[in-house]
Length: 320
Image 1 (cartoon, rainbow, N blue to C red):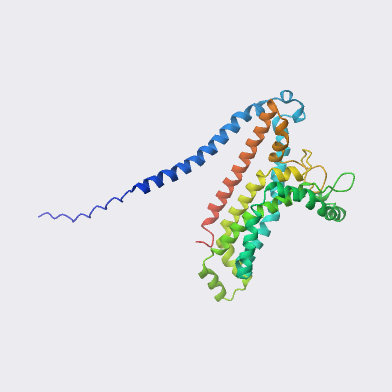
Image 2: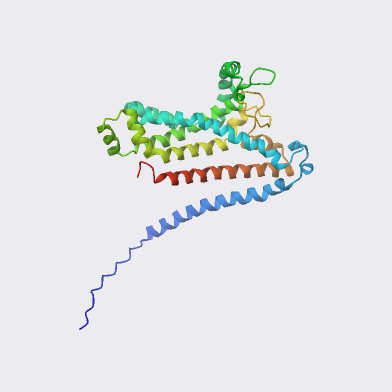
């Protein structure tokens, strides 16, 4: 006598309404549009920049100083990365400190006011930051640069000019302006991440007798580590691509130097394109577009590295 097991009832297919179909199509199209835009930019930069990359120094003429593409773009790459690194070294601890004060120390009314002020800084145009750096910050920092050169001139970073003195329109001034520009977005992200720390984690730390600083170190920072890295990488992307503020503040001469307060400073790729493109023609236009391709690759590599760091550290963060 054979017996058959009762079959489980088949699950009904979810009802697909018209609104669901439209929303699915719109969201998919938006995602594809981003990828297509990125691909289109990469193809344009590659096709237009390839003649400049393959051109010989004789074909490029005097616009590149008799150099080939690699020799021409290397100081620009160095200046771009160097300025961004200095800006991040200044902005990261400041943004974390401001975000911690807003989220864990300031009274609620003051915290809300400071949050509005920080968010308002993100709406200031780049040219305003450039004017501020050129007309105010560089003039006010000149005595401080003199002090650095006089007391710390033995350090290559503060060597100043070969014949003595310093320059206020230096890479350090440009980096300070960049640090102020990337501060709002980094502070906003860190603030939101700190506020999302599970309340149970904080209460458990306080119940074990932790001080406010130990609470932040043991409960907040482990949970927010990936968010801090993400905010730093967003700030790095902004600093790498900033154009007008750097072009207005920096007195560039196309050299490779770690001296931060001298008159000979490396330029950045974005600032160099903005200054040179209006007068460029022929192969030199392709060279500038090719340098833009290099900046595109650097920015993509920085974001890819940040994603890898976040994914690698995610399993070890306090969020889990």
